[in-house]
Length: 64
Image (cartoon, rainbow, N blue to C red; front, side, top):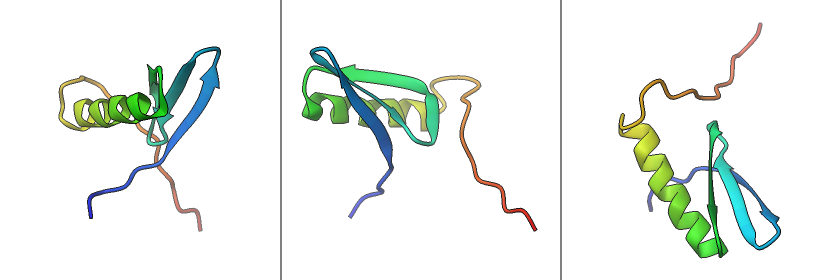
């Protein structure tokens, strides 16, 4: 089984919009949920493949 990653999505008019939870600054869209998910996969590959410089991420910090 491959890696799983969470995303946030919603419908606006006739389009589906989403962003990867780890990369909230980078949004994508699709006419269907299937197209949206494919676009999210492509976006993830671009963001983690160093094709986009200065990628901003979200992380969690453990406090004592």
